[in-house]
Image 1 (cartoon, helix red, strand yellow):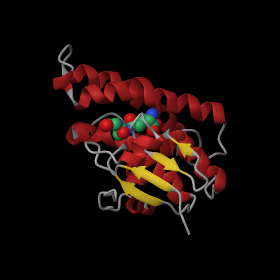
Image 2 (cartoon, rainbow, N blue to C red; image 1 turned 90 degrees about the vertical axis):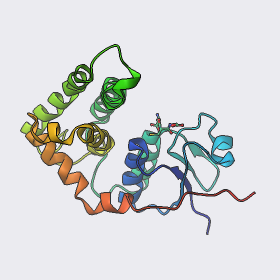
Image 3 (cartoon, rainbow, N blue to C red; image 1 turned 180 degrees about the vertical axis):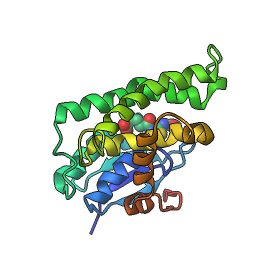
Image 4 (tube, protein in one colour; image 1 turned 45 degrees about the vertical axis):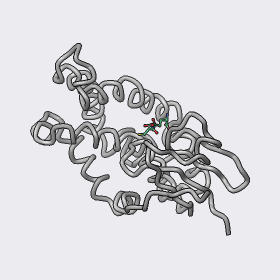
Length: 205
Ligand SMILES: N[C@@H](CCC(=O)N[C@@H](CS)C(=O)NCC(=O)O)C(=O)O
């Protein structure tokens, strides 16, 4: 039986959030791990913008945004109630992550590409979001309440990247609840499953 096709890249945080939702929903998909430098022609044909993740459903519909893939997966099955939180609140928090925070993350991670400011400046910009999350996690176990929601899943891969830029700094930073929350996701069985290695997809000609 044909399966939906997921174009993915193992270390991409957008692809990670999509895979977590797909795996949590127990959706079977054909994972096509791409090389970002040599994208398959079929991927570019169904999604000319050329980013991953992209999911092509069996009847042909193409979902080209990670959040759309998450929403589709969780609409099929949401065993952990990740869509139970208020939808507007979920969307608002993810928008900060994907907007200002991602911008700061890129600059903090690759300061040589943004020499206008020192690296620490970009880290401090990113910390505004860390502070917001830390304050929320001081109040409850997950970012929007005492149970996990789509917001946690959509955000943690980006916090993982931010933490990894300078692991020593993050370990000693003023965000203990955020560290515990991040570790919870990174140590989960689900994360181990979605980080399994797939061979790079080679298109047959
Ligand atoms: N808004 C997109 C962003 C996806 C994205 O930017 N993915 C990166 C990899 S992490 C990508 O494919 N970049 C294209 C490239 O590097 O060529 C989504 O949410 O799916």
